Length: 482
Image (cartoon, rainbow, N blue to C red; front, top):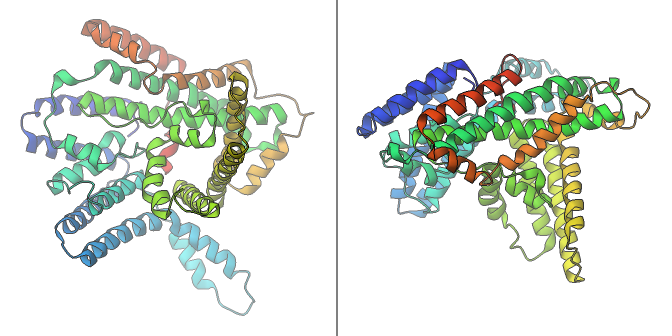
């Protein structure tokens, strides 16, 4: 079920109404919301609802065992079992085929004489594996829950029902944000008050998300990104360059749109979840970019991987660089089972290592470049470094990415895909970052003070315009595959 569809509109209208009708009956409300969340997830494939149920039972059971165990060895054993279950689950569905493919590639290059028919049998079987939607997101939430209970940052949820609802809560289930249990479990345990609904912000975020997804992301995908990336050998410098720019805007508008709408729908139901994007392409360093892009994943990797590895506390510089590279290599692998994703993560790890070295080198010499021009130059530089890495993220193989790089040198090729509407849409998509964060608080505060009739009328007009500007049908969100 995709947000900008009639199916979801009907579903959410029912859930929204029942949500507030049952607010005084907490137990019944939780049961209804859990059933609604399972229905939302099972709308794609009911077979994987069992995976959510199993994850809820095992992780909550491990967390309660950790909380009540006095023996440190028992606590560590339960933590290890929970982490192993979560990593084994995600590894099977996301990486089994990749590992079999790599193993088969190695096996076929070994000396002849061995029978490798059994490799083919494994390959064929693995090729039928279906990736459950959003498995990376709810698995990371389960890991953070068990980890926080182990570190005594929070007690376990009061009941299995509370934790199951947290893990399956439908607005952010399939594409984030990755919400920590400490932030959401206790909200779900309390009755919501309808007079606390932030209608203005919720409406603003939902409409902004619809605009980013339907008008900008879908248009750029259809009119330049998909054609050029599918056949880069047919296009020249300007088409290729703006296809790369357009993809950077497309993936931002696509992913931030889902996050915006997820936050908006949560607000309408009475819950608050953290922001996931904050104008990332306006950052003047790669470090700041990662503090603004997919913030819930960035902070998860920082708190549960980078810092436990030693973070920047290690005495030797190479230790920090090692920790950065490990973190971003695994971050790239999180996005997908492929060498291109690993290369994408490696590039960002290298960017951060070089940036850190450069910053420390400049500090030792007392160099500080202040002013608007150095800041602008840094933003342009960061933008192009990020766009370069997107080549590998979007490409199906290294060959595709390298072909895109070669296409940048075909100056004589005619310009076909770079049209005025495409150029305008790239600019509009870049400017849409100004809708992130708290930048438009005055707008939604003003909207909240309006009479409900005026609110509904204005929202309906904006929605009609968005639907009129967008193409027929809505493509799935890019991050559904992760």
